[in-house]
Amino acid sequence: KDIDVSNDHYEGTNYLNQLNVYDYKEGNQFYPNQSISRSEVAKVIHTLFKDQLKKIRDYEEQPFIDVLSTNPYYESIIWSYEVGIFDGDHGRFKGEESLNRAQLAKILVNTFNLQSSSKTPSFIDVPEGHWAYDYIYTLYGLGITKGSNGYFMPNQPVTNGQFASFIYRTMQVTGLD
Image 1 (cartoon, one colour):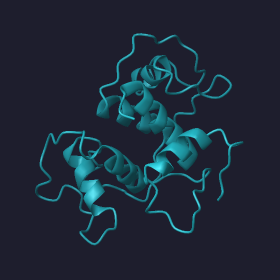
Image 2 (cartoon, rainbow, N blue to C red):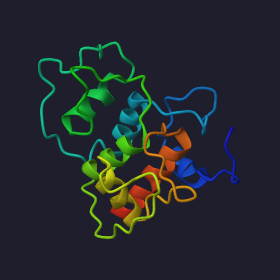
Image 3 (cartoon, rainbow, N blue to C red):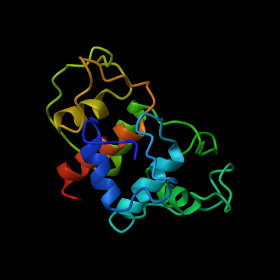
Image 4 (cartoon, one colour):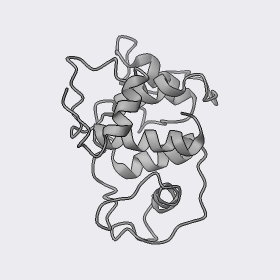
């Protein structure tokens, strides 16, 4: 109910909604400008790609001490670890924390083996020495991100709307749609 065709992220959100990606949300509200949590990112990617991404490691010895089996996102978090999307931070998943735009760039590039040779500098806030430079410019070269007025805003939290657009464009580029 809270997103319409005038929203910049409507196309991606609508497409993903048709795939029943947002069944975990309640009350027909999407909250496009709200930050997406790490748990929600795991849930959406798991819902979309659980049959396409291959397991690269086992979830043994409980690498995330902050993820209990009673967590509503438990299955998605475990799967996202096993396919290599999330590694955690000193034994913690930190599921309620927001994901920033640079972290999402790394996740998308690594998860989907994205490659682009086009790295024309265009983002004022992503200098060549930035840790996520290659990830961000890979997304830019593939048309997955455009930024805003010359900025990528790598440290800004990813909103629900932005995440929908990033995933939708990634699906189009990879042919996974």
